[in-house]
Length: 95
View (cartoon, rainbow, N blue to C red):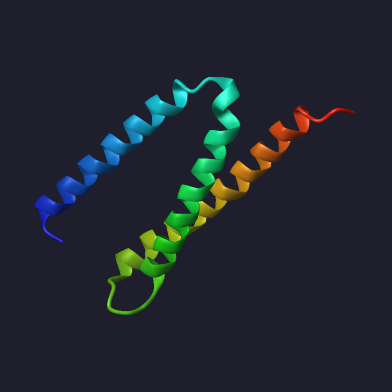
């Protein structure tokens, strides 16, 4: 990977992180549960991409390790998202 493509990828990562943080901060509590469901779907797509990046068909070792890290973080995000969604939905059930 050239230095130019690395800088572009780093720029995209920083921009996406900033925009995601700003978006989540501005979400009202009533929209949090549907947003978590959408986030879980996107993380599911990230899990599939991470599995592809982890395979051994010509990818470099760095790609394998980054794919494994992405797989673990996306899995934690999906499990945590479903746990939070389930907890919030329980708040609306009558006792």
